[in-house]
Length: 117
Image: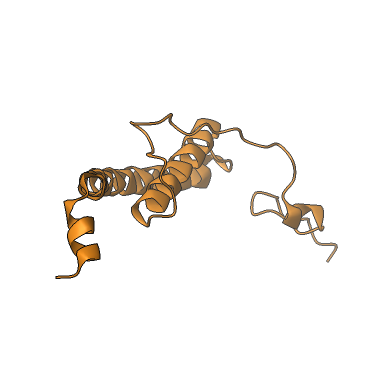
């Protein structure tokens, strides 16, 4: 066994990282279930009312940011531990038009224009 491998195996920080990764894998699985519920509920609300629920938009944005943070930690792209070891990601919904709408494209929520047939 090489000296580097022995040294790496004896580092407690890598084993602690493994424990955190296992914990965040469980959190990720739970977040997936919640995300599917939010997506389904938001779709049904939009289907019946014609507009998405603002609170669900805000929660969905913060939940997707959380999932992103967890995935970054699990893939070693970040050393920052997400919630519950850090703050829950904030969701500040922007009321600006998206770049697609700014370019004159219609949003899916835009009612179709009546034709002059």
